[in-house]
Image (cartoon, rainbow, N blue to C red; front, top):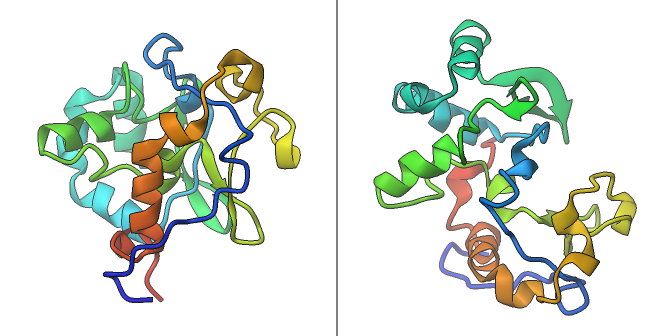
Amino acid sequence: MTPETTTRPEVTNLETARFECVYPTCGGTCCSNGRPPIEAAEQARIQEHLAKFLPHMRPEARAKVEKEGFVTKRRKEGLFALGVSKGWCVFANDGCVLHKVGAVEGDRWKYKPWRCITFPLERSENGKWHVRQWKLKGEAWDLFCLNPAESPKKPAETLKSEIEFLEELEGGRESWRRQED
């Protein structure tokens, strides 16, 4: 597949799932103890620009990152996970610091790990995507936004920009985010 290829990734339950992000009403609860895995290239990009993020971080998260770094030794999907401070992602501070700094620079997703960008979309082991929903495919998180009863809206409407990003990711135009062999 060439980087110019546009693919419509298959999201198996796009028409049957229900999802609506209500941030900031929820307080960004998906950033609470989420610990998403982070690709090596994403980690390097954040590390390269870390000085931009530190002034915007919560004091305790900044102290932790300055002492221990922003990833943990814990692994998910074979990758290191983002660190947590006082129950929240180290980059959470009234929203995502990575998102905010990127937005100021003209690209809200410039520094965010792709797993954060595509939430609540998740790739299954078979390579197909699905919208995370309570109890679907062993979903452990009981976030209210993953409860289909909380919103009548279909993710095809509410996740348009995330699906567009997914097309870029799957099409190779966001390949810098993936670990290089």
